Amino acid sequence: MELRPDRRPGSQPPRGARRRRRPRRRLGGDGDGVDRISGLPDDLLLQVLVRLRCARAAVRTGLLSRRWRSLWRRLPGLYFRGVAPAALEAALAQVALPNLSLLDVDVLDSHRFSADAPMLKKFTLDAIMHRDFSMSLLAPMVENHSWICSPAPATVGIDGMQCLHQLKLWTEESNRVLCLHIRRPEFSVPHPRNLQEMFQFPDFSALELHLETRGHIYGAMVLNLLRICNAIQKLKVVIIRYKRTDEACPPNCDCDQLQSADLIDLQREDLPWRSQDISMVLEEVEIENFRGSDHEVDFLKLLFRCAPLTKVIMKLASKPSSIGCKETYNIFKANPSVECYVFRKCGKAVNYA
Image (cartoon, rainbow, N blue to C red; front, side, top):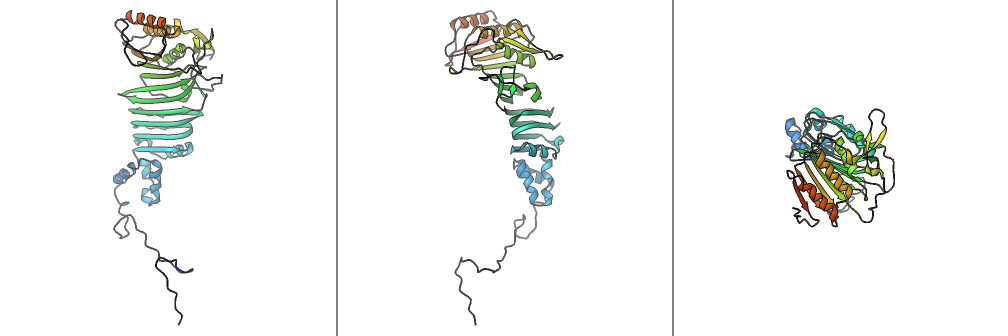
């Protein structure tokens, strides 16, 4: 009689031997092989998917059973993180957008974003924009916006000389704030796109500008933005200064002219911005890193002349011009109905009375 060799515990079975397969446990959890979770009502299953906070994970639940395959399309909120533009477009084409109340999108190298969601209440967008990027959002019920969009370098022009570095939009105390980080490039580059071509902005009442001017005049550019965004009630301007890159603005520089476009023949015309008299609804102004240069004082005079200001906050640069500051204080004294505050670089208040 042939004896089988003894096998030690934990040793591998001989070749050709069949292994016993353990029965797969179904979703029931009690070992009876019944999928009780898939038998739950749709409302409960949707609550399970909502807690995933990830559209990709919600779609993958379709592998569990046929019961789950189309549920994600009915979710009231969708989160797309790090998805490719084509995958995002394909997913949104399958979603019941009329019932969507929350949409959170994080997309790379996006060319186009379009959505028609009449019941949408919260929209979050984090996008690296392609030079051909365009956006269309039809969502009249949105109450909470949060955008962070970064274009490719030197592809989005502001006024022919400045480039958009980053765009943010958020909701603050029921008001929408648009924030633009604008740079003046070291070299002249063509700007194939402008801001209005790429975005369909919701109504916003506050504009925040972070300007890397490289020593150039910014009054004309800011005035042009205020003419385009004519419903702005609150303006904040932060001047970003670098000793290494700031340069002396040459005489008759293009930055000292107001760029306007004729909508009929598209011919550009240069206008002296200091003498402009336009109607604004601007009420609050804050300027940070104010040096008191002639063009900065002239910009301040224009705001006092054209807008019904109620409050002005001035935060001085580290080495402001004494002459420019004195002229600024005289402007404040000549407008006693406007609350005016001045702070040094260290944060200490200045008593200019």
